[in-house]
Every structure is written in structure tokens, then in C-alpha cells.
Length: 191
Image (cartoon, rainbow, N blue to C red):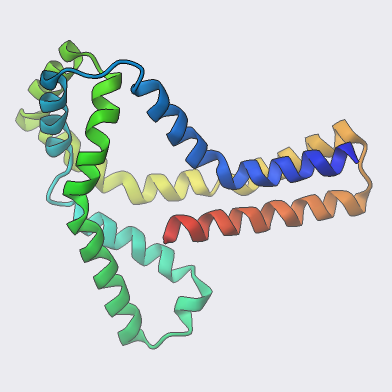
């Protein structure tokens, strides 16, 4: 019974971790209210980070996600292109709203001195170049990290089964539950 409870917890963890991490970061960042100066500096910093290439990168990342989505593959090519273009456009249109939501989070973490330094750096040609390259590398970095998830899940399943002395059938069920949890999480990220 302990094994099944632990398995259920592991499956939930695999789907809830990103949301819980974001909530924890937000909770810790709202402990002290940032000053108006911190908020303004944060807006400037985030605006400097959101380069003109951001929309293109979003389009590329969404295209990769759609290429792996079985339901999207059943649609005619023209429909896939339309949905990809529309999703990228609407996501890019949300950048000002995303920045507005991120400002209090970043401002609550960085000091005014740190924000002054960040703005000063990213407002230089070198800083802008680094910001652009950071955006360009996002799709490949995302793929690199996501490629490791199955390996981590396999190790987790094996260690849990060692700890709880599960049967081969329970190990296989745990693996299946974790794969399904990861698929649900991937689907939620796509939406």
C-alpha cells in the first residue's frame, strides 16, 4: 500500500512540479513589496530581454511541439500552418501582459542595485547581443533538457521500486503511470 501511495505521489509530482515551483517563487518574492524604482527597473530589464526575435523563437518552439503532437498530424498541412501562425501571433501579442505579470516577481527577488546593473548591461550592444542569443538558444536548450526527462523518470521508478521492494509488474505500472503523467504535463504546457 505504501508503494502505491508513493507511486501516486511521484506521478502527481511529475505533473505539478512546474506550477508548484512557480507558486513558491511568487510566494517568496511577495514577502516584501518592491519599491516603485524596483518595479520600473524591472520593466526596463524585461523589455530589454524580450528581443525582436522572441516571436520567431515562439513560432519555432510551437512548430516543434506541433510536429510531435499526434492530433496535429491528422490535420491538413494548411490547417497546421494556420494554427501554428495564429498561436505564435497570439503568444507574441501577450508579451506585454507576460511582462506585467513578471515585473512584481522579478522586482521582489532582485535588489535595486542588481536591477540597475542588469539594465545597464542589457542596454549595451554586448548585453543586447547576449539577450538575442539567449532567445535564439531557447528551443535547442528546451529540447536538450526535455531529452533527459525519460532518463530521470526511469531512474526514479527504479529507485522507488528498490525502496519499496515492488514486483516487476508494479515497476512496469509505475513506469506507465509516469509516462502518462509526463504526457499530460506536456499537453498542459502546449495549451
